[in-house]
Length: 465
Image (cartoon, rainbow, N blue to C red; front, top):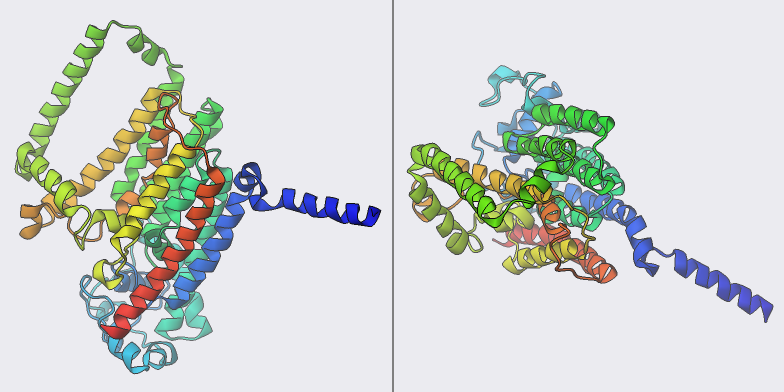
Protein backbone atom coordinates (compact mmCIF):
# COMPACT_ATOMS: atom_id res chain seq x y z
CA UNK A 1 0.00 0.00 0.00
CA UNK A 2 2.81 2.39 0.89
CA UNK A 3 4.56 1.51 -2.38
CA UNK A 4 1.39 2.39 -4.35
CA UNK A 5 1.11 5.70 -2.51
CA UNK A 6 4.76 6.51 -3.20
CA UNK A 7 4.32 5.78 -6.91
CA UNK A 8 1.13 7.84 -6.95
CA UNK A 9 2.85 10.81 -5.27
CA UNK A 10 5.80 10.50 -7.69
CA UNK A 11 3.50 10.48 -10.73
CA UNK A 12 1.58 13.47 -9.37
CA UNK A 13 4.83 15.36 -8.90
CA UNK A 14 5.84 14.57 -12.47
CA UNK A 15 2.50 15.87 -13.73
CA UNK A 16 2.95 19.10 -11.79
CA UNK A 17 6.38 19.53 -13.33
CA UNK A 18 5.03 18.83 -16.82
CA UNK A 19 5.26 21.87 -19.10
CA UNK A 20 1.54 21.84 -19.91
CA UNK A 21 0.39 20.98 -16.37
CA UNK A 22 -0.33 24.61 -15.50
CA UNK A 23 -0.34 28.03 -17.13
CA UNK A 24 2.56 29.13 -14.91
CA UNK A 25 4.64 26.11 -15.91
CA UNK A 26 3.82 26.65 -19.58
CA UNK A 27 4.73 30.33 -19.45
CA UNK A 28 8.00 29.58 -17.65
CA UNK A 29 9.02 26.96 -20.22
CA UNK A 30 7.49 28.32 -23.41
CA UNK A 31 10.89 29.45 -24.71
CA UNK A 32 12.03 25.82 -24.60
CA UNK A 33 9.07 24.79 -26.73
CA UNK A 34 9.97 27.58 -29.15
CA UNK A 35 13.57 26.38 -29.47
CA UNK A 36 12.54 22.76 -30.03
CA UNK A 37 10.01 23.63 -32.74
CA UNK A 38 12.20 26.31 -34.34
CA UNK A 39 15.19 23.99 -34.75
CA UNK A 40 13.05 21.04 -35.88
CA UNK A 41 10.86 22.89 -38.36
CA UNK A 42 13.74 25.14 -39.41
CA UNK A 43 15.88 22.11 -40.27
CA UNK A 44 13.03 20.56 -42.27
CA UNK A 45 12.58 23.77 -44.29
CA UNK A 46 16.32 24.36 -44.72
CA UNK A 47 16.81 20.88 -46.17
CA UNK A 48 13.45 20.34 -47.88
CA UNK A 49 12.61 23.67 -49.53
CA UNK A 50 13.81 24.22 -53.12
CA UNK A 51 16.96 26.29 -53.57
CA UNK A 52 16.43 30.07 -53.69
CA UNK A 53 13.14 29.84 -51.78
CA UNK A 54 13.50 33.33 -50.28
CA UNK A 55 12.76 36.62 -52.10
CA UNK A 56 15.72 37.46 -54.40
CA UNK A 57 17.23 34.07 -53.59
CA UNK A 58 19.94 34.06 -56.30
CA UNK A 59 20.99 37.56 -55.24
CA UNK A 60 21.51 36.48 -51.63
CA UNK A 61 23.54 33.42 -52.63
CA UNK A 62 25.81 35.41 -54.94
CA UNK A 63 26.29 38.14 -52.31
CA UNK A 64 27.15 35.61 -49.57
CA UNK A 65 29.48 33.75 -51.95
CA UNK A 66 31.33 36.95 -52.82
CA UNK A 67 31.82 37.78 -49.14
CA UNK A 68 33.11 34.24 -48.50
CA UNK A 69 35.61 34.63 -51.35
CA UNK A 70 33.93 31.81 -53.30
CA UNK A 71 32.31 33.53 -56.27
CA UNK A 72 30.20 30.91 -58.07
CA UNK A 73 29.23 30.86 -61.74
CA UNK A 74 25.48 30.52 -61.24
CA UNK A 75 24.87 30.64 -65.01
CA UNK A 76 26.32 27.10 -65.19
CA UNK A 77 23.13 25.98 -63.42
CA UNK A 78 20.91 28.00 -65.74
CA UNK A 79 20.35 30.85 -63.30
CA UNK A 80 20.18 34.32 -64.81
CA UNK A 81 20.75 37.86 -63.65
CA UNK A 82 17.03 38.47 -63.14
CA UNK A 83 16.00 39.07 -59.54
CA UNK A 84 12.24 38.55 -59.86
CA UNK A 85 9.83 36.11 -61.42
CA UNK A 86 9.56 32.36 -60.92
CA UNK A 87 12.62 31.59 -58.81
CA UNK A 88 12.09 27.86 -59.27
CA UNK A 89 11.88 27.94 -63.08
CA UNK A 90 15.34 26.48 -63.67
CA UNK A 91 14.91 23.84 -60.94
CA UNK A 92 11.46 22.64 -62.00
CA UNK A 93 12.60 20.43 -64.96
CA UNK A 94 15.30 18.65 -62.93
CA UNK A 95 12.91 18.11 -59.99
CA UNK A 96 10.22 16.69 -62.26
CA UNK A 97 12.73 14.48 -64.10
CA UNK A 98 14.41 13.25 -60.90
CA UNK A 99 17.85 14.70 -61.75
CA UNK A 100 17.78 17.54 -59.23
CA UNK A 101 20.17 15.96 -56.71
CA UNK A 102 22.73 15.13 -59.36
CA UNK A 103 22.57 18.58 -60.96
CA UNK A 104 22.73 20.73 -57.82
CA UNK A 105 24.31 18.51 -55.15
CA UNK A 106 26.73 16.20 -56.99
CA UNK A 107 28.10 18.57 -59.63
CA UNK A 108 30.89 20.73 -58.25
CA UNK A 109 30.58 24.50 -58.61
CA UNK A 110 32.71 26.49 -61.02
CA UNK A 111 34.43 29.33 -59.22
CA UNK A 112 35.07 32.46 -61.23
CA UNK A 113 36.49 35.93 -60.97
CA UNK A 114 34.07 38.37 -59.37
CA UNK A 115 34.55 40.73 -62.32
CA UNK A 116 33.01 38.14 -64.65
CA UNK A 117 29.69 37.99 -62.79
CA UNK A 118 26.69 39.48 -64.61
CA UNK A 119 25.80 41.34 -61.40
CA UNK A 120 27.16 42.05 -57.91
CA UNK A 121 30.68 42.49 -59.23
CA UNK A 122 31.96 43.56 -55.83
CA UNK A 123 32.40 42.54 -52.24
CA UNK A 124 30.24 44.98 -50.26
CA UNK A 125 31.95 47.44 -47.94
CA UNK A 126 32.38 46.33 -44.34
CA UNK A 127 30.45 49.44 -43.29
CA UNK A 128 27.42 48.52 -45.40
CA UNK A 129 24.18 46.77 -44.56
CA UNK A 130 24.73 44.26 -47.37
CA UNK A 131 27.95 43.00 -45.77
CA UNK A 132 26.91 42.57 -42.14
CA UNK A 133 23.46 41.23 -42.92
CA UNK A 134 25.05 38.45 -45.01
CA UNK A 135 27.88 37.63 -42.58
CA UNK A 136 26.23 34.48 -41.14
CA UNK A 137 25.07 33.06 -44.53
CA UNK A 138 28.54 33.73 -45.98
CA UNK A 139 30.05 31.66 -43.17
CA UNK A 140 27.61 28.87 -44.03
CA UNK A 141 28.55 29.07 -47.71
CA UNK A 142 32.23 28.73 -46.78
CA UNK A 143 31.54 25.74 -44.50
CA UNK A 144 29.37 24.06 -47.15
CA UNK A 145 32.04 24.50 -49.82
CA UNK A 146 34.58 22.74 -47.62
CA UNK A 147 32.14 19.90 -46.88
CA UNK A 148 31.51 19.33 -50.59
CA UNK A 149 31.90 22.05 -53.27
CA UNK A 150 28.46 21.91 -54.87
CA UNK A 151 25.92 24.70 -54.93
CA UNK A 152 23.27 22.57 -53.22
CA UNK A 153 25.53 21.68 -50.30
CA UNK A 154 26.74 25.29 -49.98
CA UNK A 155 23.18 26.63 -49.85
CA UNK A 156 21.80 24.00 -47.45
CA UNK A 157 24.81 24.44 -45.14
CA UNK A 158 24.32 28.21 -45.15
CA UNK A 159 20.61 27.78 -44.48
CA UNK A 160 21.20 25.48 -41.50
CA UNK A 161 23.83 27.74 -39.91
CA UNK A 162 21.73 30.87 -40.48
CA UNK A 163 18.62 29.17 -39.09
CA UNK A 164 20.49 27.86 -36.05
CA UNK A 165 22.04 31.25 -35.18
CA UNK A 166 18.82 33.25 -35.63
CA UNK A 167 16.68 30.67 -33.78
CA UNK A 168 19.10 30.64 -30.82
CA UNK A 169 19.03 34.45 -30.75
CA UNK A 170 15.21 34.46 -30.74
CA UNK A 171 15.24 31.79 -28.02
CA UNK A 172 17.14 34.12 -25.69
CA UNK A 173 14.93 37.08 -26.62
CA UNK A 174 11.76 35.09 -25.82
CA UNK A 175 13.33 33.83 -22.59
CA UNK A 176 14.42 37.36 -21.65
CA UNK A 177 11.25 39.31 -22.46
CA UNK A 178 8.90 39.64 -19.48
CA UNK A 179 5.61 39.89 -21.37
CA UNK A 180 4.27 38.69 -24.70
CA UNK A 181 6.32 35.50 -25.07
CA UNK A 182 3.60 33.71 -27.05
CA UNK A 183 3.05 36.80 -29.18
CA UNK A 184 6.74 36.84 -30.14
CA UNK A 185 6.59 33.13 -30.94
CA UNK A 186 3.63 33.63 -33.28
CA UNK A 187 5.38 36.59 -34.90
CA UNK A 188 8.62 34.72 -35.59
CA UNK A 189 7.34 31.21 -36.31
CA UNK A 190 4.91 31.98 -39.10
CA UNK A 191 5.93 30.46 -42.48
CA UNK A 192 7.20 33.80 -43.81
CA UNK A 193 9.74 34.34 -41.02
CA UNK A 194 10.60 30.64 -40.70
CA UNK A 195 11.37 30.61 -44.43
CA UNK A 196 13.58 33.70 -43.98
CA UNK A 197 15.45 32.08 -41.08
CA UNK A 198 15.95 28.85 -43.07
CA UNK A 199 17.42 30.66 -46.07
CA UNK A 200 20.21 33.06 -47.00
CA UNK A 201 17.96 36.13 -46.74
CA UNK A 202 19.24 39.17 -44.89
CA UNK A 203 15.75 39.97 -43.59
CA UNK A 204 15.87 37.28 -40.89
CA UNK A 205 18.58 39.16 -39.00
CA UNK A 206 16.50 42.34 -39.18
CA UNK A 207 13.56 40.49 -37.59
CA UNK A 208 15.80 39.42 -34.69
CA UNK A 209 17.21 42.92 -34.14
CA UNK A 210 13.76 44.55 -34.20
CA UNK A 211 12.45 41.90 -31.80
CA UNK A 212 15.32 42.60 -29.40
CA UNK A 213 14.61 46.35 -29.42
CA UNK A 214 10.91 45.73 -28.70
CA UNK A 215 11.89 43.27 -25.94
CA UNK A 216 14.05 45.97 -24.33
CA UNK A 217 11.08 48.35 -24.47
CA UNK A 218 8.68 45.80 -22.94
CA UNK A 219 11.04 45.00 -20.06
CA UNK A 220 11.57 48.71 -19.42
CA UNK A 221 7.81 49.22 -19.22
CA UNK A 222 7.28 46.20 -16.95
CA UNK A 223 10.12 47.29 -14.62
CA UNK A 224 8.79 50.87 -14.81
CA UNK A 225 12.28 52.32 -14.99
CA UNK A 226 14.79 53.21 -17.68
CA UNK A 227 18.26 52.57 -16.25
CA UNK A 228 21.54 53.84 -17.68
CA UNK A 229 22.42 50.22 -18.49
CA UNK A 230 19.27 49.80 -20.59
CA UNK A 231 19.82 53.14 -22.33
CA UNK A 232 23.38 52.12 -23.25
CA UNK A 233 22.19 48.72 -24.48
CA UNK A 234 19.49 50.29 -26.66
CA UNK A 235 21.96 52.86 -28.06
CA UNK A 236 24.38 50.08 -29.00
CA UNK A 237 21.54 48.07 -30.51
CA UNK A 238 20.48 51.15 -32.50
CA UNK A 239 23.98 51.39 -33.97
CA UNK A 240 23.88 47.69 -34.92
CA UNK A 241 20.47 48.15 -36.55
CA UNK A 242 21.82 51.04 -38.62
CA UNK A 243 24.58 48.80 -40.02
CA UNK A 244 22.83 45.42 -40.19
CA UNK A 245 19.15 46.14 -40.99
CA UNK A 246 17.30 47.55 -43.99
CA UNK A 247 16.21 51.17 -43.98
CA UNK A 248 12.58 50.68 -42.94
CA UNK A 249 13.59 48.58 -39.92
CA UNK A 250 15.54 51.57 -38.57
CA UNK A 251 12.21 53.12 -37.57
CA UNK A 252 12.24 50.83 -34.53
CA UNK A 253 14.99 53.07 -33.10
CA UNK A 254 12.22 55.62 -32.40
CA UNK A 255 11.31 53.49 -29.36
CA UNK A 256 14.43 54.76 -27.58
CA UNK A 257 13.59 58.51 -27.66
CA UNK A 258 9.94 57.62 -26.90
CA UNK A 259 10.94 55.77 -23.73
CA UNK A 260 13.44 58.49 -22.80
CA UNK A 261 10.74 61.14 -23.11
CA UNK A 262 8.20 59.17 -21.08
CA UNK A 263 10.48 58.09 -18.23
CA UNK A 264 12.66 61.18 -17.95
CA UNK A 265 9.55 63.38 -17.75
CA UNK A 266 8.25 60.96 -15.07
CA UNK A 267 4.70 61.32 -16.39
CA UNK A 268 4.62 65.11 -15.89
CA UNK A 269 3.71 65.78 -19.53
CA UNK A 270 0.91 63.21 -19.48
CA UNK A 271 -0.45 64.41 -16.12
CA UNK A 272 -0.29 68.03 -17.25
CA UNK A 273 -2.29 67.24 -20.38
CA UNK A 274 -4.82 65.03 -18.57
CA UNK A 275 -5.50 67.69 -15.94
CA UNK A 276 -6.49 70.31 -18.53
CA UNK A 277 -10.13 71.05 -19.41
CA UNK A 278 -11.71 69.21 -22.32
CA UNK A 279 -11.75 72.24 -24.63
CA UNK A 280 -7.99 72.74 -24.21
CA UNK A 281 -7.36 69.09 -25.03
CA UNK A 282 -9.62 69.35 -28.06
CA UNK A 283 -7.85 72.52 -29.22
CA UNK A 284 -4.43 70.91 -28.85
CA UNK A 285 -5.54 67.86 -30.88
CA UNK A 286 -7.04 70.13 -33.56
CA UNK A 287 -3.85 72.20 -33.89
CA UNK A 288 -1.70 69.07 -34.02
CA UNK A 289 -3.99 67.56 -36.66
CA UNK A 290 -3.78 70.69 -38.82
CA UNK A 291 0.03 70.65 -38.61
CA UNK A 292 0.22 66.95 -39.53
CA UNK A 293 -2.24 67.32 -42.41
CA UNK A 294 -0.33 70.36 -43.70
CA UNK A 295 2.99 68.51 -43.61
CA UNK A 296 1.36 65.50 -45.30
CA UNK A 297 -0.06 67.66 -48.10
CA UNK A 298 3.38 69.17 -48.78
CA UNK A 299 5.24 65.83 -48.56
CA UNK A 300 2.77 63.84 -50.67
CA UNK A 301 2.65 66.27 -53.59
CA UNK A 302 5.52 64.34 -55.19
CA UNK A 303 3.37 61.19 -55.09
CA UNK A 304 0.31 62.67 -56.78
CA UNK A 305 -1.13 64.55 -53.82
CA UNK A 306 -2.71 63.49 -50.53
CA UNK A 307 -6.08 62.69 -52.18
CA UNK A 308 -4.51 60.30 -54.69
CA UNK A 309 -2.42 58.57 -52.02
CA UNK A 310 -5.39 58.13 -49.68
CA UNK A 311 -7.53 56.81 -52.55
CA UNK A 312 -4.91 54.22 -53.48
CA UNK A 313 -4.44 53.25 -49.85
CA UNK A 314 -8.17 52.68 -49.38
CA UNK A 315 -8.36 50.62 -52.58
CA UNK A 316 -5.39 48.56 -51.40
CA UNK A 317 -6.93 47.90 -47.98
CA UNK A 318 -10.52 47.23 -49.01
CA UNK A 319 -10.07 45.61 -52.42
CA UNK A 320 -6.56 44.22 -52.87
CA UNK A 321 -5.44 43.70 -49.28
CA UNK A 322 -6.69 40.15 -48.80
CA UNK A 323 -7.07 38.63 -52.23
CA UNK A 324 -4.20 39.89 -54.35
CA UNK A 325 -1.42 37.43 -55.14
CA UNK A 326 0.85 40.26 -53.98
CA UNK A 327 -1.10 40.82 -50.77
CA UNK A 328 0.85 42.31 -47.89
CA UNK A 329 -1.55 40.42 -45.62
CA UNK A 330 -0.57 36.95 -46.82
CA UNK A 331 3.10 37.79 -47.50
CA UNK A 332 3.43 39.11 -43.93
CA UNK A 333 2.12 35.98 -42.27
CA UNK A 334 2.02 32.81 -44.38
CA UNK A 335 3.08 33.18 -48.04
CA UNK A 336 6.76 33.94 -48.75
CA UNK A 337 6.71 33.91 -52.58
CA UNK A 338 3.27 34.67 -54.09
CA UNK A 339 1.97 31.83 -56.23
CA UNK A 340 5.34 30.00 -56.07
CA UNK A 341 4.63 29.07 -52.45
CA UNK A 342 0.81 28.91 -52.55
CA UNK A 343 -0.85 29.08 -49.15
CA UNK A 344 -4.62 29.23 -48.50
CA UNK A 345 -6.04 32.62 -47.50
CA UNK A 346 -7.80 31.10 -44.47
CA UNK A 347 -4.40 30.28 -42.97
CA UNK A 348 -3.47 33.97 -42.85
CA UNK A 349 -6.84 34.71 -41.24
CA UNK A 350 -6.24 31.96 -38.66
CA UNK A 351 -2.80 33.37 -37.88
CA UNK A 352 -4.18 36.87 -37.43
CA UNK A 353 -6.86 35.49 -35.09
CA UNK A 354 -4.24 33.73 -32.94
CA UNK A 355 -2.19 36.92 -32.75
CA UNK A 356 -5.24 38.85 -31.54
CA UNK A 357 -6.10 36.19 -28.96
CA UNK A 358 -2.49 36.07 -27.71
CA UNK A 359 -2.45 39.86 -27.34
CA UNK A 360 -5.79 39.98 -25.54
CA UNK A 361 -4.74 37.18 -23.20
CA UNK A 362 -1.60 39.05 -22.13
CA UNK A 363 -1.60 40.92 -18.84
CA UNK A 364 -2.17 44.67 -19.24
CA UNK A 365 1.20 46.18 -18.37
CA UNK A 366 1.42 49.51 -20.26
CA UNK A 367 0.29 52.38 -18.04
CA UNK A 368 1.70 55.26 -20.11
CA UNK A 369 -0.65 56.21 -22.99
CA UNK A 370 2.27 57.86 -24.79
CA UNK A 371 4.00 54.46 -24.94
CA UNK A 372 0.97 52.60 -26.31
CA UNK A 373 -0.01 55.29 -28.82
CA UNK A 374 3.63 55.98 -29.69
CA UNK A 375 4.17 52.27 -30.46
CA UNK A 376 1.08 52.24 -32.67
CA UNK A 377 2.39 55.35 -34.44
CA UNK A 378 5.73 53.67 -35.20
CA UNK A 379 3.84 50.67 -36.63
CA UNK A 380 1.73 52.97 -38.83
CA UNK A 381 4.79 54.97 -39.94
CA UNK A 382 6.47 51.76 -41.08
CA UNK A 383 3.34 50.75 -43.00
CA UNK A 384 3.01 54.17 -44.67
CA UNK A 385 6.71 54.29 -45.53
CA UNK A 386 6.58 50.92 -47.27
CA UNK A 387 3.24 51.73 -48.90
CA UNK A 388 4.50 54.99 -50.38
CA UNK A 389 7.84 53.53 -51.47
CA UNK A 390 6.69 50.29 -53.05
CA UNK A 391 3.22 51.15 -54.29
CA UNK A 392 3.19 54.85 -55.12
CA UNK A 393 6.83 55.58 -55.90
CA UNK A 394 8.30 52.34 -57.30
CA UNK A 395 5.21 50.51 -58.51
CA UNK A 396 3.89 51.46 -61.91
CA UNK A 397 1.01 50.86 -64.28
CA UNK A 398 -1.69 48.70 -62.70
CA UNK A 399 -0.03 49.01 -59.30
CA UNK A 400 -0.54 52.77 -59.34
CA UNK A 401 -4.12 52.60 -60.57
CA UNK A 402 -5.43 49.82 -58.32
CA UNK A 403 -3.35 50.39 -55.23
CA UNK A 404 -1.21 47.24 -55.22
CA UNK A 405 1.80 47.37 -52.94
CA UNK A 406 4.40 46.27 -55.47
CA UNK A 407 6.47 43.18 -54.71
CA UNK A 408 6.98 40.90 -51.72
CA UNK A 409 6.79 43.60 -49.06
CA UNK A 410 4.70 41.85 -46.40
CA UNK A 411 7.83 40.62 -44.62
CA UNK A 412 8.73 44.24 -43.83
CA UNK A 413 5.61 44.55 -41.66
CA UNK A 414 6.04 41.26 -39.80
CA UNK A 415 8.86 42.33 -37.48
CA UNK A 416 6.83 45.34 -36.30
CA UNK A 417 3.77 43.28 -35.29
CA UNK A 418 4.83 43.08 -31.58
CA UNK A 419 4.33 46.86 -31.42
CA UNK A 420 0.60 46.12 -31.58
CA UNK A 421 1.01 44.19 -28.32
CA UNK A 422 2.26 47.40 -26.65
CA UNK A 423 -0.89 49.12 -27.87
CA UNK A 424 -3.36 46.39 -26.86
CA UNK A 425 -1.65 45.88 -23.48
CA UNK A 426 -2.55 49.40 -22.34
CA UNK A 427 -4.16 49.26 -18.89
CA UNK A 428 -7.06 51.35 -20.18
CA UNK A 429 -7.82 48.72 -22.84
CA UNK A 430 -10.20 46.50 -20.86
CA UNK A 431 -10.96 43.72 -23.36
CA UNK A 432 -9.24 40.50 -22.24
CA UNK A 433 -9.27 36.76 -23.00
CA UNK A 434 -8.36 34.28 -20.25
CA UNK A 435 -7.22 30.96 -21.66
CA UNK A 436 -3.44 30.97 -22.02
CA UNK A 437 -3.02 27.20 -22.14
CA UNK A 438 -5.67 26.69 -24.83
CA UNK A 439 -4.37 29.54 -26.98
CA UNK A 440 -0.80 28.24 -26.63
CA UNK A 441 -1.70 24.69 -27.66
CA UNK A 442 -3.70 25.94 -30.65
CA UNK A 443 -0.82 28.23 -31.59
CA UNK A 444 1.71 25.41 -31.57
CA UNK A 445 -0.58 23.20 -33.65
CA UNK A 446 -1.02 26.05 -36.13
CA UNK A 447 2.76 26.64 -36.26
CA UNK A 448 3.57 23.00 -37.00
CA UNK A 449 0.76 22.56 -39.51
CA UNK A 450 1.42 25.81 -41.40
CA UNK A 451 5.17 25.28 -41.81
CA UNK A 452 4.73 21.71 -42.99
CA UNK A 453 2.02 22.93 -45.37
CA UNK A 454 4.46 25.49 -46.79
CA UNK A 455 6.90 22.72 -47.67
CA UNK A 456 4.20 20.43 -49.11
CA UNK A 457 2.46 23.14 -51.16
CA UNK A 458 5.74 24.46 -52.58
CA UNK A 459 7.00 21.04 -53.68
CA UNK A 460 3.55 19.99 -54.93
CA UNK A 461 3.32 23.07 -57.16
CA UNK A 462 6.79 22.52 -58.60
CA UNK A 463 6.31 18.82 -59.25
CA UNK A 464 2.80 18.92 -60.72
CA UNK A 465 2.37 22.36 -62.31
